[in-house]
Length: 114
Length: 109
Image 1 (cartoon, rainbow over the protein chains, first blue to last red):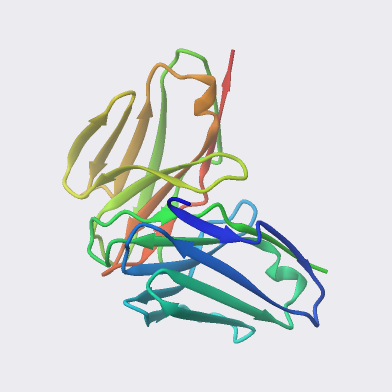
Image 2: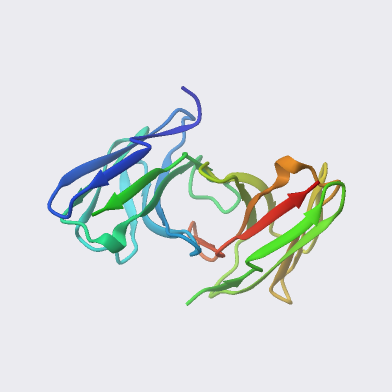
């Protein structure tokens, strides 16, 4: 595997389910990010981790819970979601948090909440 | 809050040139990125500007004017594979990227 991978690619869940999204980066990066991308809307930054420490929690509802067990893996745990949470969830990584560090994105998980 | 504007859609002919404008009003500025995103795929990095002027990379060029809060992405010699969404993103703090909603470019034969 190369780059940033995400599983599953598609997920359909009910409002009472609990599920987790997984992201893995194979680039040796130190920073990882979760973004939400809704149709026709800008990407919204949700969480940022640097060296496994959370540095940003962008006013995200508690039904989204991130976990970063090591610098290569990032999870997003989901529970009691709402239909409006249906979106594409993108994971990204960068070398660090420096200004010119480009972010490398994974292919995303398309989430549908029924 | 952050305000990043770019046109929703643009259409151009194969072989032509298209310019995608991006204007921004943000609380800080530490650089501007352009990303390309094909439908159903990950955004991929195209360019980074932090100083005023033009950066050229093959068929793609990006321009920045910090005093005007303005950037554009220029796509030359358009190919069908250039049909995609183009995202303008401003780094407005230490590491946060604020994105525009994206411009969908359709290239016609």
